[in-house]
Image 1 (cartoon, rainbow over the protein chains, first blue to last red):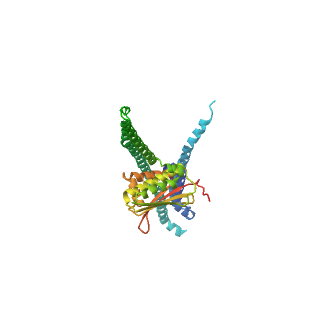
Image 2 (image 1 turned 90 degrees about the vertical axis):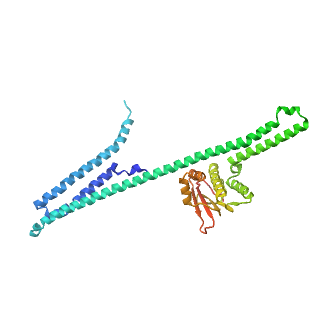
Image 3 (image 1 turned 180 degrees about the horizontal axis):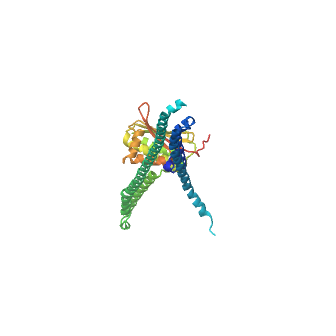
Length: 88
Length: 276
């Protein structure tokens, strides 16, 4: 707890994964509940798509962002590993 | 089915507003967590800054104390030892050989007396810098010695009792503890107009306790913290920096009966083995 750098959430991929899951789950909570009974209705289906698809895209974008964070943090150790390899 | 169809618009609006509500809740939660985290970070940074500030004050105090100590030694040597040796030199000048034997003897005797005084003075200075009893015989003897000197004045009744001092601590620890006791006693003599000072020592669960009681005007922990943060109280800052070096805890409190003040010094000592 003493080191404040350990508390910056934005650089943590886990934070972004959790954010994506929370937003997707919260947004699709009602559409999924109503889906069983109303999926046959085209009007409902349109609305379902209108809500679900953007959330799905947003979730995947945030996942991608989280993965990028992971790659960024791993890059340093990979670079260190590269530096360790003796040059011919 | 008919029932379902008739309720479709209401379902659509429920779906829309429900989803919006859920999203608002989720985003609110995330924003709250982020802001809370930021506040925690800001608090931590503030705490660190305060700690650094405190460290700086302590460092300044110790440097200032060192300078004052040097000035004191320089003043002692310059004002006392210098003139004494100069006087001795006067008695032993070249004209001495041309004078009669009784004057020569008198001059030599005077010079010897002055040199003896100077030796005593220099011994006093060196003892005040580093008490030889502490180095040779340990903390108990040094504190006893100090308290006997204080009691000898007849103004304050100083006594000490070491209950569990069967083995000596490391020399640097003993010196630091002795300096803290010395500073505390100095403060009591200077400010509190106490009639008695009593020091007890105990050892319990890897901790070496020194408790000091006196019946004069004392300070409590709040006063100690306040004086430590202000520019006043050089001696107290020295106590604080010494306790930090010892990784010890010091606590100033007023006794429950409100008749006397108590200072507790708690020094952790892992390698202190009890000899039964």
